[in-house]
Amino acid sequence: MAEYLIQSLGLPEWFAWSLMAGLAAFLILNLMAGGALAFIWAERKVSARIQDRLGPTRTGGKFGWLQSLADGLKLLAKEDLMPEGADGMLFRIAPYVSFCASFAAFIAMPFAFDMVGLRLNVGVFYVVAVLGLEVFGVILAGYASASKWSLFGAMREAAQVVSYEVPLGMCIVVPVMLAGSMDLVTIAEKQAGWFTNWYLFHDPFTFVIFWVYVTCGVASVNRAPFDLAEAESELVAGFHTEYSGLRWSFFFMAEYSSMFLVSGLAAVLFLGGWNGPVPVAELVGLSEGSGETTGYLVRLLGLANLLGKATLGVLFMMWIRWTLPRLRIDQVMTTCLKYCTPIAAAMFAGAMLWLWALPGGVTAAMGVGVPGRSRSAGEVREGWLEGPGGRRAAKARPADVVRAEVPR
Amino acid sequence: MNLSLPLLAAINWHGFFFLLFAALACSLAVAVVLAENVVRMAFYLVLSLGATAGLFFLAGAEFIGAMQLMIYVGGTLVLLVFGVMLTAQAPFVSIRTPVGDRVLAGLVGFSLLAVLLLAAVTSPVWRGGGADPTARATEPMATPLGMALVGVRVDAAPTGSEDSQAAGVRSGYLLPFEIVSVHLLVVLVGAAYLARAKRRRGLPARPTVRMGGAP
Image (cartoon, rainbow over all chains, first blue to last red; front, side, top):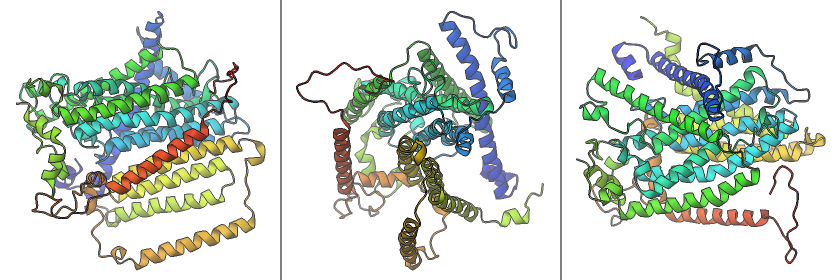
């Protein structure tokens, strides 16, 4: 896009690049803020439905559409309090640390084919690394508040996040192994076609590990039943007890956008990314490369697919939150260390063996050809496949070759 | 539309961002030394390491940059937690370093810096004439590294020969990688052994009331 601006409109290079960077940042910020508004409204309605209530009904019409906006205005007008004895600088900066970590993770997140802030060769690794930084804000807030409730919440959060990074990493390695790349765009591209091509249905092990990922994802974004850092029934409000007004709402924007990010990551890694369950565009003979307008429409369809899947993921987390009771801290640790980690390790080994024994997945093992997108391994942009020693690299991983040949 | 302001176009943006991140990393590192509160020190350290990760991203080494974020910045998290746990009491909130310690630390630090600078200046590869740093930013860097770790040197395979084993290509970094992994595993097992709850043998476990749920 920036190249397009430079070449066809004759804009200077620095201006085109900063314009595109500004546009991407603007879109991501609005996705985060608008998403938080929509999801807070949805959370109210979902929780009300589950608890046999109505939820907001008056603000802005029948369904309380404007409830979040009214909340936002209220938060803007609230006094920004800071307790005496708090560490002023850290107290002020903590919400922004959380928010920036969440924002930075979105940079490498692909929303559709070619719609990615910055396509990184190690995208998935980057997203996980940056998402782990969000906890810094929580710990700083807990320490700087000079309140025992806050400190308790922060310590619990630290223990939880450090533990859950282990099984989360193991879950993420499996799609990386299947795709042979850490590039999120490549991982999603390899799942093109019908929904049977999704890594969720690649083999039984990936199906199981997806649910481990869901558990760890919910824990890593600090949502109930793993919301020990907040635990409003024991710790008042946990790490954000002392926060009010806009600083408090920054924590919530960070939380909701992290939920969205984890769901989007699940969509890319296991649920086909921007490829819908039925390849509609492919069936009517369109693809990203066919023409300027149609290619754009296909990308928009992909965008709708990915956002829809991520929204479904967030709604699933809400359902979980209002259904299950909160775990105790020892139960949280037990879930992580005694269940999630061994299951993830076993499934990782299983997926590896499956890839070795049945490289084409379930459908290839049964000899059923799946009508998929006609995109061969050579077309997928993998630098090392074409590089020197490319043949050897391809030999080492027969999965791609076989998978590319089966559909037709 | 004439937007090509001569000043903005003349700036070497790569160099500008390099200087920005380098200045951030250095000044925050100095702030770590000068701060008196342990938690603030850890926070400055996080920011300094983050700026270093920014330098890696700027150089196009995305894998190293993400690694820096994951390991160093993430590892400082634990440091921060310990800082909070050990110094939350009043006497430790503000730590003043004695002058002797400062002198000693300065001596060690500046001699190390001198050695590193000497090495950097005398290294012929780093003295200009290298490839354009922006040109390398587009190469995929992680895959050859990952393949080398499992023993296949994709980057070093000679062109034209099909079987790289026969051509005597170096066998990658599989052995060092395995040694490091086993070493880390030993450390993990040792840490779990040291940290486990110690129970006296023979006595039945007493039912205890758990406050807040520490196991």
